[in-house]
Amino acid sequence: MKKILLTSVVALALSVTSVSAYELKSNMQLLNAELREVQQGFITSDKDGVKSAIERFAKHANELLGNKEKFEKMLPANKKHKSNEAVMSAQIIAHNVQIILDAVENKYNQSGKLRREESQRAYTYIEHACFRCHNIVRDEN
Image 1: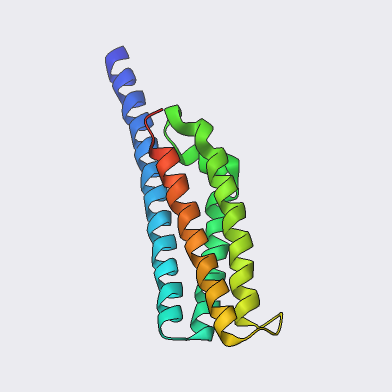
Image 2 (image 1 turned 180 degrees about the vertical axis):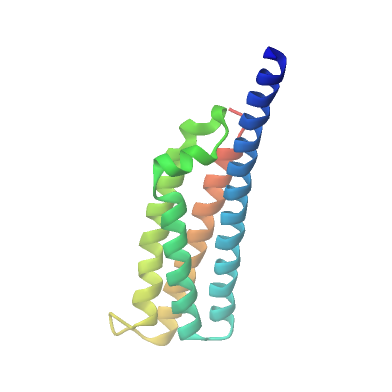
């Protein structure tokens, strides 16, 4: 009886970890798809598409990365301390999303060329924040 109970507890623990890992992976895939939509909007000069995609991306990025405790639950036990990196990435992403939105809305009355360059640079900073977090969280230590 004890053996069955122990096996059940271990199976339950593994399934919870698997569900968390799946949830993290599916969320990251969603963010990646939304970032690709932003990039496509830049390529096709679709301001409305960029605005719509970056707003969705920002909302989902903040929901996933901006809450340390929630993100921590999705990480394996030996990496929970790295959840701070996700929060920092969420802050970097939010700042650069605002730069993109300001450029799309021409908030500072800049030339089209300057707005495109600034918003595209902000997009690359968002990518860098994503890669930096991935590299740190995936690190062995």
